[in-house]
Structures are given as structure tokens and as C-alpha cells.
Amino acid sequence: MERASIVVVLMIAVLIVGCGARSAPRETQTAEAQPEETQVTEPVTPAPPPPPPYQLFDASRSIEYARQLADGIGYRPGGSAAEHQAADFVAGALRDLGCTNVVKQPLPLPNGATTYNVYADSPGSNPNEVVVIGAHMDSKGGSGSPGGNDNASGVGAVLELARVMRTNPHIPTLRFAAFGAEEVLQGYGSGNHHFGSRYFAANLGLMPGKVIGMISIDMIGVGTSFYVNSTLAAPATFAELFTNWTERMTVPYTFRQDTGSSDHEAFEAHGIPSFWVEYWDDPYYHSPQDVAANLDPALVKQTGHLVQGFIESLDAADWQALDAAAAYH
Image (cartoon, rainbow, N blue to C red; front, side, top):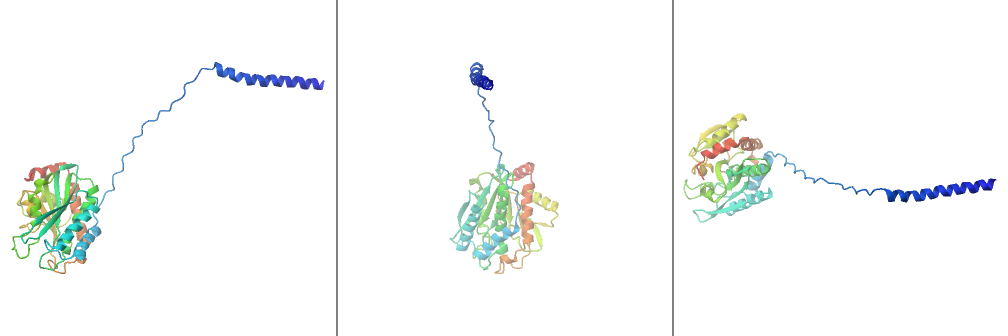
């Protein structure tokens, strides 16, 4: 009885297992074929890179450039080997800042020497309009002056403005320039000066775009009074825009019509609205004591911030008004 029960149980178990083994294939054979699922991947558009961080004029960087010119190179009258060294220094600094279009423009001087202008462009959203921001590299011939304030201070500011404005948005193309032989050429009379900027302005037609304004930065590190100067040989449009900005920034200033004692003179002679910014007076002017150690960081900072803020504050309508006033094409 017990053995018979075991046999019956085993037979039932075999039947159950066999049904299970055969039933699965039957289900597979009778089931309808299902299409394979295809996953659709949407194309991914890469996010644009974030804009570069906004840059602000740094007086310490500007003064370091001035120190390398005045203390490192020293006395550099127009056409001298030292002035040539200064031109190489400026060209190298612009390249280090990422400028790929640096130009060294040679020009002859009446004494048979050669001087250079150095410049580079930072294209704006309207590349057809150009504003020149410039300063002279040489120091006064015959003075032995290393030109810390006159005018390594201006060249340092131009280079620092080139650094900050290369990445900050701006409308016109900015042409950063260092001019050779601005000072009176020793032994050639008081009318022989501004050779670099006069040559530069006379050859603007060989450069891209229309120059609609020029800012000369000359002697900004020593003094008690801030001056905005213009010869008024060209429309005063640019100078007026700048003095309006200076008033908005509550910076005390004096405007004066000058006889052309800096590189703005050459551009105004071609009908380009221009002005010159400076601090005055300088007790070390044209002397061996004009060293970079005398430069006041607060004055350099204020000038740099004023010029940078001014350029960035003007809208397309302001630049169009300046374009209409500029005679040079």
C-alpha cells in the first residue's frame, strides 16, 4: 500500500513536469512576433560657452608696465635704441594679452634715425567705426629723463585698457597705439614733434575702418588737477561726451583748449574729434627724477576707470553722432 502510493505520486509528478516542459514551446510558437523597440536619441545642442568675466582696469598692472619702461629701459629719446626697445616691449605685451594683429610701423626722423608706432585692434560689434586710444613711448631728448610719468604712465594705461577691453563688450573697434617720437626732436626746433602720431594719423586710410575719435593718455600719475584738453581744430563732440561722463562720475576736472601738446593734436588736424587726459602739475617733469616710483596709484586708477567706463557707457546713437562729426574717411 505504501509503495503503490509512492509510485502513483511519482507518476503524477512526472506528468506535471512534462507538461510544464512542453507548454512553454507551444506558447512561443503561437505567440505573435513583437517588433524590437528602437530608442530615438534627440540631438543635443552643446551649451554656448559662458561669456568671459567682466574685466576692470587694474592700476597695479598699469603701473607695472610703466615701471618696466621707465626703470627697466629708462631714458628713451625718439629714434634711440632704447626707444626701439620700448617698441619691442609694447609689441610683446600686446601679443601676451592675446592680440594677434600687432603692427610695428616704422617711420624716418629728420635726423636720419627711425622711430616706430606700435598698435593692435580689438574688434567691436561695429568694426567699421574705430576709436584710437594712444600714448607716446619716448621720453624727452636731452633731459636724461626715464619718463615714468611722461609718458610710461600713459603707455601702461593703454596696455591695461587693452587687456580689459579685449574681452569686455564694446561697439567700435578699439585701436590701442603707442606712438614714437612725440617729444620735440633734440636740435631740430620747437615745431619738430609728434612724429609718430602725425605719421599714424596721415596714414589712417591704409588701415581698416573709419577713425571717429581719439583719446591721448599722457602724464596721468602725478599732479593735483585733472585736465581734459583739446585743440578744438576738430568738432568738440568727443570731448563733450567725455566731460559729461566725468561730471556724472563726480570727478573734478578742468577743460582747456590747448595748442596741441600731446598726440591728440595730429588727429584733430585731420578732423577727428579727440582729447587728451592728464594730471598736472608734475614737479619731476622732463627731469631725471621722473621715475615710476612717483606714480600715484589712485590717480592712475581714476583715469583708467574713467576712460574704460566712458567707452562702455556710450550707446550706438552716441557713436553714430561721433561718426557724423568726424571728417576723416
